[in-house]
Length: 146
Image (cartoon, rainbow, N blue to C red):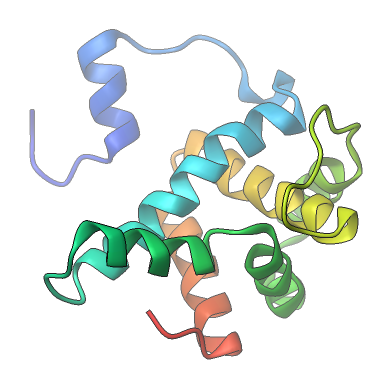
């Protein structure tokens, strides 16, 4: 495989292109993959801050990769999101949830689901650069320590 190919492109090259129009995906499908993408970005940032015990890495990650922090991030960056991103967010936030918030208010859980939907939509659209931009912007605006 050639260098500087995105993870999504590498997956498509290795396993075959997907001919499904992602616009047909539900907001919860976007949120499902978006949760993993957001966590991968955060885990990468934390790991690259220096060698630490796995338990320490996990504890630090879970402070950021949680509904409360994701809700705060999306509130902080809402005005910086495009109309399309805001539409995906609203669809994700307002969709009927099939699980409940474990350690968060329902409001934060819904906002987090909307944010994850945006991350998932952007990733599946091949726009991981924008995912990273939005996460970075949220981290900076909230002064989150990694």
